[in-house]
Image 1: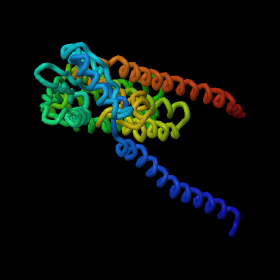
Image 2: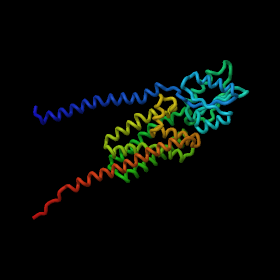
Image 3: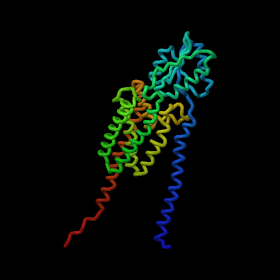
Image 4: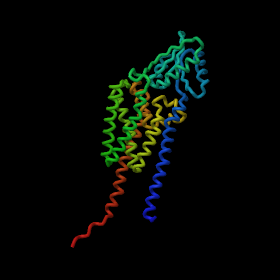
Length: 336
């Protein structure tokens, strides 16, 4: 066998081995990212309020303390203050003790999973025969009582953002044209998403345009990250973007449950990535009049700004590299 035929054969063999190793690695990573947080779902410093007479509140705090590290208990003067804390998204619910009995205030709009968990926890520690009244002060909409639509919408948003960044890059759009394409596609995606989730499915219940703005900014943050990474490091940027936004950002978002139910550190990391920040901001503007939306919106804006800046800088860097190369090409010699 000649050297000219051996080299391609060796190259093909390496590529074959690379594919055989890469695919199981991706499968393992995906299972770890998606299945591990789901298998370890449990409350971790879950903020909950208590209100009522001092002796009763102390007994409640002691009861929650038995679940070590599970709950972060906040005291409130009365039921009105506890309801205000839930509306501000400071706590997921509150236990209020009154002369008439014990009342549990929940917010299924913040997380149906947490609302159910609190019902179980409070009922379990109530004295035998005692009645616990449950009031959902921020109910999930009738069109999505279990939050399934909201949770299911996260992956399509991530895919839409990824598609926007990849297509913009593969079509050869650079600089301001790439930025214009990303912004325009994200804005239209947000409008379409809101029309489906709010107007058709009834899964959202807030200001229509505010929801569209959050969805658009989420898609832009993801799409610009893909395009920016590709502009800086080439096509490997697509893989890095997929790792951050889909394999990690989606399962670590906590949208299907709550960030405080994910393993320690995972929920916090997820809120620093666009999928998690977008889900939290959407809940805030849709069900809580924008309460606690500032932090998630800041995260989305930071990712979008960084991605768009990288897209512009990558285009300028490419021009700077190609112009000297073009200048070095010798001019054709004159004829005759």
